[in-house]
Image 1 (tube, helix red, strand yellow):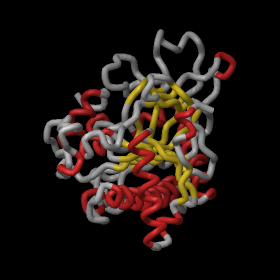
Image 2 (cartoon, rainbow, N blue to C red):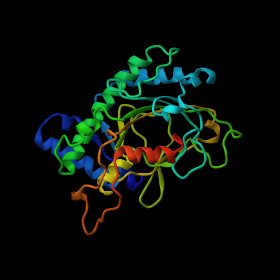
Image 3 (cartoon, one colour):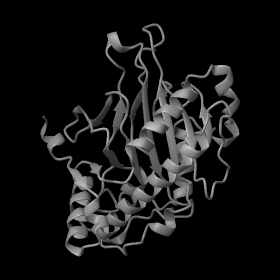
Image 4 (tube, rainbow, N blue to C red):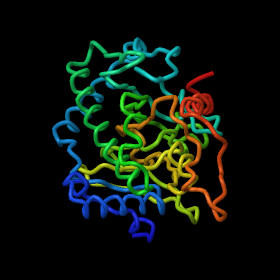
Length: 314
């Protein structure tokens, strides 16, 4: 096991939820340190049940098993991929011209959703299961952000009103089966990228493939247990903290030749704030050794910029 992997801890979020000051501080310091050093952490005892996970993965598999002419009914280009189905190969990494070898389905906030969510009539209970999982992951994400606020010396609820009811997205991804003729030279399931948002919560993927780029420019795999969540820092949080918390480049590589003709499913939850949130670097994260690295920008402005860069908006 690499030194990098040993520095990505598995943390017990029940310590934070206990409300005991010493355990809250211990968890917050451990999480913040891991985000500072690697941009990643693994969380257990988070409240997302095995049944929820199993039900959602079964549901998205049912959707992606539909014929393309049925899935395309739920593709709305005018929504810039923020709700419903996004077709194979449309999204690409920033700076890449090759479309990723995936298709996906987006669910937004079921309580305050603008635009409204889109639900395939062909899949039973998609709305019920999708909404339940979304709200559970949002609550876990809000707890993670409370912990980060404590680590940064901010008021504990600093992020709450900026994020709750915001632009967070739950993405169900199908990395579809491939053959050698399908794969463009250099095309991969998800090219190297950083996430746009504040933090990402990843439910256990159905197969290996996630890799992260270390500080010494080596690609290494991240593998978690099925009942754990992988959490990573996104570009918005890196901007806000002036790189104190790092957004680590990651990718999903193609499987080995003998496994090309297999599917991989993954469900990340992208924690986005409301568009008006100010991403100006925090004064507490700027000093003579760490001068300000980013121009002032709102979350909405940054999201608009990045959606164009990755091919979801013209």
